[in-house]
Length: 195
Image (tube, rainbow, N blue to C red; front, side):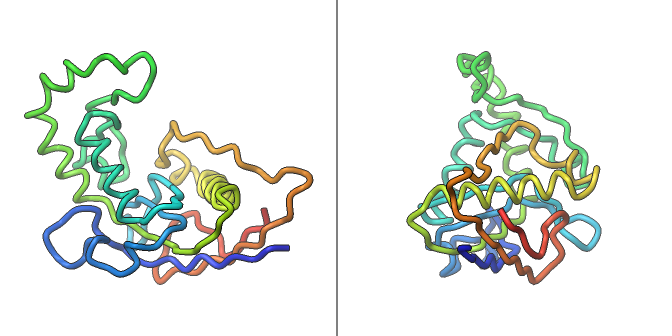
């Protein structure tokens, strides 16, 4: 059985003007698993789980670019920080919306301040670890999502509802033991997973 340890570091700002952003930290050059969260009742609630074989800084920059280009859906940031999701832009990433760029351009001046406020509300956690096996990162990412979604109704309803994670263990694959440590409470994260 292969063992991994996820030592969460954060929370970091995704965007900001001070030293709390991910970009100003040595860990920004790392790779591994990351969480986009919001503060919620003395804890953090997960909106998105991701993995990267590139640096956390590069992957975070790619997410920000997707928001600024209209690719990603945009939430009402005032409701979002209370745990309520209301989309004010449905994004361009879905097949039926890919060619609605003119609608985004028409609303860009309205949406840019909203995107700014939304990005300011996120708190990023990263768990750096190196592996040449992208599949192991994907399996860990998928298992974390499953744990979060099954931990409570609140966590399941809050989690990003369109992300697809289907990276369970193949019969011939070695089982992974993942131990998880965090400096703060993150809703839905287990202390250990066998996947």
